[in-house]
Image 1 (cartoon, rainbow, N blue to C red):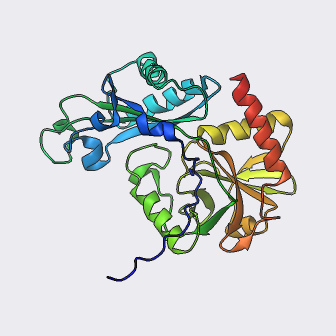
Image 2: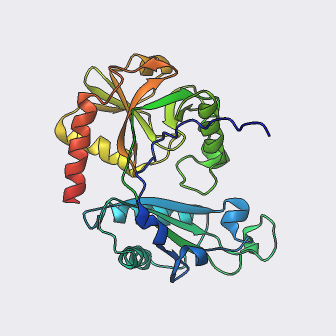
Length: 306
């Protein structure tokens, strides 16, 4: 039997330390908190069958869920956008998060994935009217401390962040195939994550995080027209403005990224993750730069105050 190819070391913006406590976690599924073996949904579920649902990722720091009200607002706006009734109030969804946290005795360095689908379908077809049993609400929580051994390597891929009339990239939906294909392309190119352009060829985002560069002390990110409306992205913009760091939401090209002094990603899991190379080109010193370090400190202060 031929030897299997050796797997490359897994490095990503979501790499976390191994934690044995994750082996005995409890999960929330439709009002019940159950062990992993019972945390299951039907193969007729709209999310499994069609990717028909929305979700949120949240972080627990020192007993507090960072910006939870803003996550609830985004979740309920997304549900309304796809004409889906969550069947719970915002306070009830928050309580489900708190109950799952308490059941697992969690205090800090925790990641939560809150998922809502249109629920179980009567037949295996697309029409939303076939989802007649009400939504499926599930919560996964893990002890999850970021452990990224080096700055992230990006590769530009042909997969674009598309137009709102196809699938609005601002929508945090379960339908992630475009981003997954982008991630595969980056992996094939020897990178950790994909840098994605918008329909005009401007730099936009990666397959899972929002993207920033630093040039001559100024922070640049995309216009936001074709990327996920990231909460961490918005907080970084806010802390920059409050601290007097020039920050711009603007169009810029790959050439601008290659000659940047620093580059970093933002997301709920990793907060601010440094980028070392883009398309094989070292960015700045190839490590987290001084402006990114300052933003990270400002962000930590903001989380502590929230």
